[in-house]
Length: 264
Image 1 (cartoon, rainbow, N blue to C red):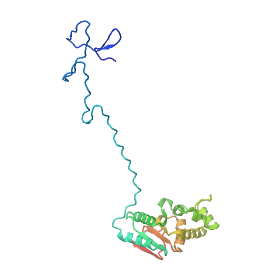
Image 2: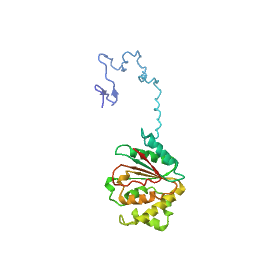
Image 3: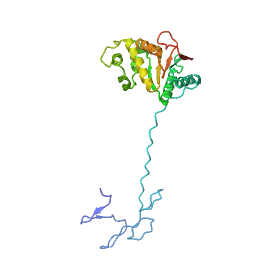
Image 4: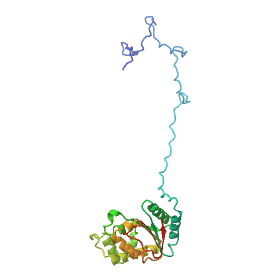
């Protein structure tokens, strides 16, 4: 669109509008009026003023802003250390320190909301930092009637090569209990399964020490509790057991023989 007041010459070229009162003589050529306050003579070309605040000369081009390096995402944070639990943490350290030459059991017992789960997580983090093989599970009030559900969680991170190295009857018992062969729940023979779990723990401990971390043990399902009770009583060297539970009747309480109980 054309600026207001512009007109086309007969040849089709755009002419500047005349300033009022110029009154040019016929046949004379028009020149554009000088910019106000510039002090330029007719015919001279004004230069573009520099951009405000940039400090750039008219002919210079601004450079692109430097590219900020992308920060790496933060690493996974370790669980917070429990505050005011020096006695329990010291007991956990003693449990992990002695696991190589013998088996050991530590029970953390206390009411709900006192920080048992936080202590279990701290123990798991410390065990993994030492290179222990950690097998963990947690009981749930909604799963107390399900067969071997806690045991399946406990063995979920077991090295498949260790399972494959077991005798065929032990592998068959594990597969039946963990529903790996299509058997219905609860169909496994628990004495054979207990022997298989014991053999598996022995196989794992031969390579590196093992920590069994069992939280909310008062809510373990009965079939898992029966197998774990059998295995804990017969543990060989290289296996540590950490149990957290509420002091309430019923549920599983780990055998106390050979272990220490931290009262809370």
